[in-house]
Length: 432
Ligand code: PLP
Image 1 (cartoon, rainbow, N blue to C red):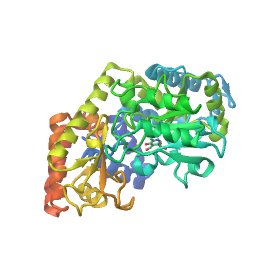
Image 2: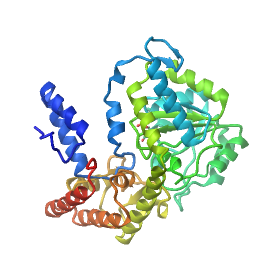
Image 3: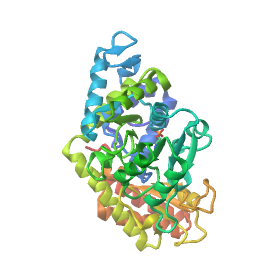
Image 4: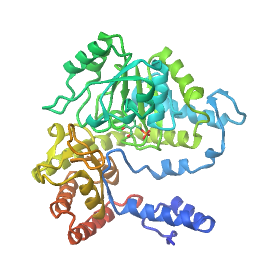
């Protein structure tokens, strides 16, 4: 059982929650307390994760979960929605202000759900969609066969330049001419370079296609001015809210086009979802409020500075970075130049044993299987939230290298784990 009253791991509200839960459901309480400790005392380098503020976190765990609010503000299918209308309007207004666009739907339950509704709004089953495959950094909802996208649409792909491992816009333009798509998707899960949205729009216009930008990974960087905006270039923008944007787990759809907006509203509800998650929408509003503060710009820029510092330090240790580096929050590390035998799966396990949480990731043209891989994907959004800066990234890179150079030796992992613990104590999660 956790000592919740004066826990250095938890903020005050979480202590109260765990106290309640310990008598109501000790099994769930124990796992939750353990997870709180895990998050506090490990270094989170998974590029798609972050640590939300206590305000965002506790808004999710609130009485707003009790309500059905099918429909949209002012047009609901249930009574008693007046305060939910206020909340959803706030979320929509804030996210529109943040991205400088005229329409927002904040109801998608996730990034993948946002993409379902976006596809349904702009394409019919069987239409051709041009996207980057998952093996080169795209997302499964952009056309993987077993996914809805690969099942209901004719997916054509463009690829990265094999030499530079970056987007080759002339090649994409050529693929667009060859495939005549209804929609072109840009925006990725494992691409570390700046996306030229204006160039993508030129390509889309050249074949009369819609341009969809899925900014799930970089949304916080766009909001904070650390990556160019997809507006006014994309016809439709989808995103998650829980990565660099540092909000609750969820999705959004944005556009400047009134016709597209009407279609999107119909395809989110009733097209692909029932009741909106109003506790999550309220937490989105809180997160958007935070992202509109000047301090968020500093945060977004620091994420990129930290990614650059980590990238440089890893290169100095002998690792290769795909595309040679990073412009955003993430990097794809090719482990082979450091050790030809080293796999992403082993690296993930060994680093995990040392309290450094990462995910294995295929690198472009990876000869190994997706569950093995030759690479790691690392991101700096979560560590930057804790307050780590460039000098700390040099230390983090050396901790990573010590573990990997030792092939996960138990003594080395245990020593590194103690140093990770000390670093986490220096930068507590909810210690303020
Ligand atoms: N789009 C991109 C580019 C992503 O990277 C992700 C998640 O990693 C998603 C969509 C899907 O988001 P979710 O996991 O919320 O469905």
